[in-house]
Image (cartoon, rainbow, N blue to C red):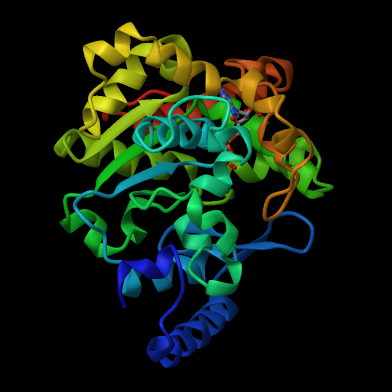
Length: 327
Ligand code: PAP
């Protein structure tokens, strides 16, 4: 099957193969270790990572169907690390010729998740909204996939990966708030405990980041490893770095005309949060407003006790010891 599987439809002649994959995944989910996540949802432990009931079949389907191209760009994050922001920035940056930054920009009418959907959640045709296609950049994909579960062609092709992660304590706090929007009744203490044990979508969050970190050190031309805090601190610098990494440099003319500030302004937390589509629109699982809470660095201080912060810091220090990574 061609790579269009992830962006458009599944070819009919592959229906049988898809049926087999579905059956395989159904059996797999019935035997994998599982943990309660939110509401009636479970996470399933597969090859060391906790995955959702739609995410796992999606990733397995992609492994057999997705053929990455050298020109593809894959945005990978641990959940609640700034995915929405990265999608907005990259959509605006990579598509600036097709969609100049003006009053008609797609980001003013669509949530970034609709413009750059998660590839593992877009593989079945019925989940795709054909209306979105006119906006979709054919090159940009996104995923929460652990490195080891990516389709083989992503690693063997020239496809580039931008990886974004975030301070673990802020991720934990952001995640609990997000799950509350999804309807979880789990207390913060219970959630914190699960998170520390590594149980969160695509978790353990440390293992997710570490695998990409190590790979980025070996292949810096393949993986650009970024931190949310760095993006917040020096957004202009990072936007230019992103442009350079994906091979669409911001020209001196563009720079003089203010492109960097225009993109940053368009994608800023305040601008996106106040758009009607993000205030009142709905995504796959929740209202779009759930993706725009505070957008701050260090909000964990308002939620974690000293002991909790210490516990997370200890796990982080242990997991990253000797690798030169700090979150
Ligand atoms: P996802 O992985 O489920 O898609 P993601 O976008 O990573 O979610 O997480 C949302 C976080 O990014 C929120 O953080 P908070 O809970 O600490 O507030 C959200 O506020 C923040 N965020 C969303 N958009 C932006 C933006 N444009 N700039 C900075 N932060 C943002």
